[in-house]
Length: 356
Image (cartoon, rainbow, N blue to C red; front, side, top):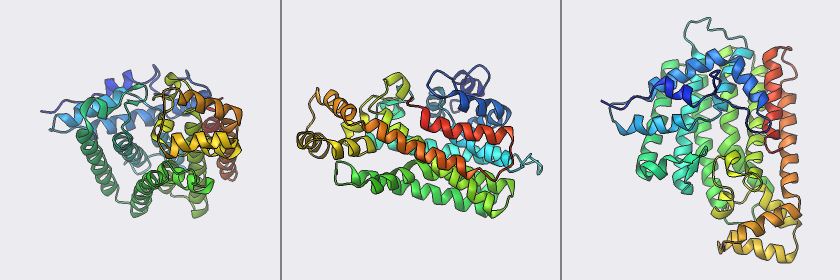
């Protein structure tokens, strides 16, 4: 028999009201309000996640229990649930499709995290030791594959070709985004446009798919479906831009991983591109040494943080994030006013305010 993952384990990683989102980090009150509004749906989604993580192969639920204990915002499944509800889905077919597809979205996301941590040799995830640090690279990759397979099973059971097309395309785009990031790593000739293509692929594409899938479940017009796709895409862009800013400006408790991980891996993100562009020739020599040549000394992270601050690279990145958050809010303009719409608008604002 395998080691079971229980719903109580998920609840212990969540807040007392079951939303799974604390307000200990800047700007998260709006996200918690959305989670509270959808608490019953999210509880049902968590149960599907627990049920689908079970396996007679003991290592799979063991590793899954570690992922559950690490918690997380579950923002992507929340977006699927919210989009379906915004579009009028009330489980009128009795199938709880929004819950099942939300779980599918979370499985796709978690699978990519498992694979990413192996690729990046990350030792922390959500403030705890990463799965690969505890169970090893092979187990992390294979359990990631298992979660992808589970997501396929959910999609086939749902039997919507539209939803299947959306999420399978997003999965391919996620992989492309990670490969693009690998090819731009250590390359300061990367343009801002190329960087934005990378973060669309690795992050925003699944945000967009999560929202569009919910719209399909809600059976709305093509215009409304496209509006939610655009909302999710821009929300995801803002979210990743802030993540990249936090790598150079947050403490480990807020970031949930080691500060400077992107720097140590030579990842070319907007804070680095902005600092490189605005810096002196001496600064550019520094950036070429630490990013392109991977010649880093213990004091270089502090030197990088100083150059980031001197050139206002974080401010530039956050302004770009706010631009995308504004586009996300604009995408919802034609939906009727409602509590849920207001919460989605607040979530867009949250995506760009986490570093404030």
